[in-house]
Length: 114
Length: 112
Image (cartoon, rainbow over the protein chains, first blue to last red):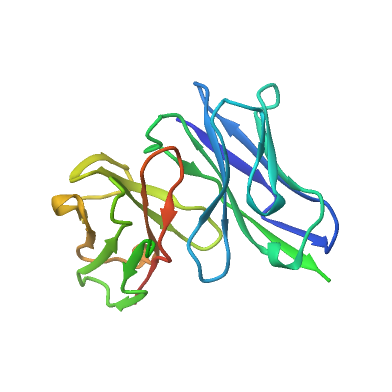
């Protein structure tokens, strides 16, 4: 079965610094990959998704992620962190077009220091 | 678009009692998912509906758990004879496909 591993349960950066959140996946078939964000007291929201079209995927709020098959990775980046980026970030993988087999990682909590 | 609505937001119950949660998805969404999330973990898949048909159930879903989606609209998740290990946030999501799931804010269950 497919799975994702998020490296680092907590990441802390200074405002304006690069954000890098790591995700590695395991799948026996070409995967669909996603990043979701959860702000305090809110539901998860889709940030971006990879569906085999382009390996570099741009999402909302200046985030992007690059699919690297050789490294089985899908790391999330943002060039300059903003205070409003503080949240929990979840990587997810699916193998079916209907995405009814979507599986999430354990999450990475991002803290942004002023 | 009023989003995915879940009720109640919080539920406190005693061990052995039955509880039922409701999820109202975005009206035109045919796919509906239930997940469970515990502290420090990501959402764990429980079950999936396409319209009124329950197409997949996780092995996590013991026979104490049952979910329905009558008429393909709202869904209910019932837990019978609750145990302390059932304490978690129960999340509902709906989708039209394409991997974009819209999540509700969840129902926090505490079993005493």
